[in-house]
Image 1 (tube, rainbow, N blue to C red):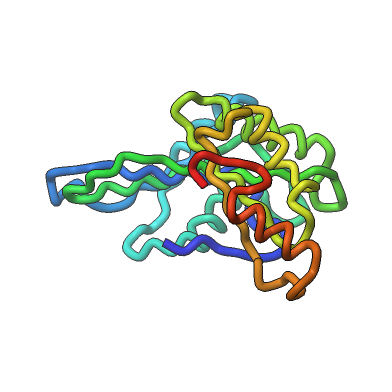
Image 2 (image 1 turned 90 degrees about the vertical axis):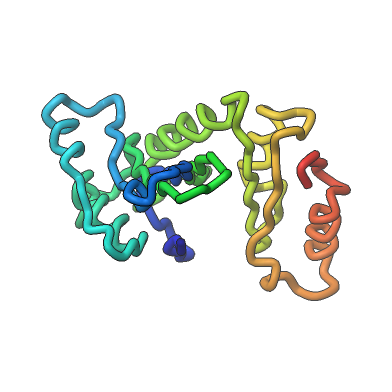
Length: 199
């Protein structure tokens, strides 16, 4: 299942993917819904509960676009919200029951994202990270120093021993060969700087 990618912000809400096991082939397939945020009125919740995209071919980029329309994040209305797009995959004889939640931390506001948006996303991310059964996927982009990326600090605050945290480095091809930052990322990848028990 391919998630849409772009250098700028992709979505303005979290996406949750849940894998479930089924033994009945009639139950196999995808179900998509929107979990309304706490600030939603009863009428808004009722409207969001009717979200039911065509899933004959699950193209997640299209589903996300439809969800943005349903949530009301179209045109110049560019803000983050507490609503969650939930994609449930029921798989025949699947042995893994697992959920992923994709919110991304950012540090500062600009014309597309406000300081209030920073706080909304931070609250959502931290509430996921502090769950005892969560595995924290600390994703850092090699385009800039990892020490400046908020997720490393937050992961160490929530998980000082580095037990349920897994590090992931993206865009390593952007590093200049032989540079100091390449050496720093090489040490990070070898678990010799910020140590995570999961690697």
